[in-house]
Image (tube, rainbow, N blue to C red; front, side, top):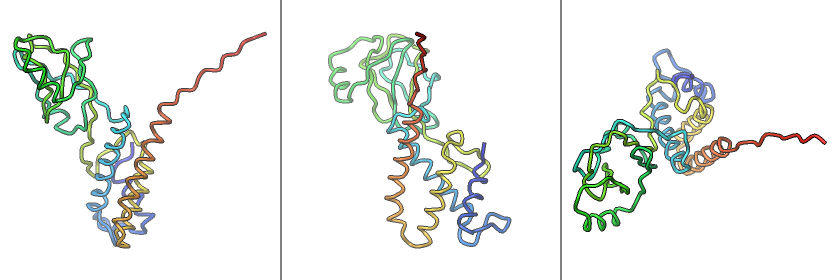
Length: 216
């Protein structure tokens, strides 16, 4: 696994901005380049989430329902770093997601505790129509996680899949700042990240069929 520092050092060769031994270059220090990288990882998280990529999907099994409580608190989900909830299960039953308006409407006509069959998202809570009739320890939540902020000694995210792309984008961003054209670069970055994320998903989703030879 490549480290963050190694990717920053590689970008410096293209920038001709070699460090003086304490993380300070001629134009850009490590702190600035690391800031660019972390912003780019956040952007990639969002693009992959929009494409429903498995690269950002995670599973949470440590949150239980509470008897007679009509919600579960997910504010601590991945330390609060998540983009969206994909699905909610109790045991082998997948609960159907509904809109918040429909959930509020349904709650007006239900009064006794029951096993949830539907859910809706409200801020950092997963809502059920009524209080749960039991404490369910088999609750499973599938969601899109956000990456933690990277430090220089950390491994690069996504198992090194986007290292070269991130390096090139750091170089482009640093040059754009130096030339005073950051606004134009931001629009270009969004499109390039969308294209790169989509290319990755197309490749990951392609499953070639086995060749079947029929003898005659």
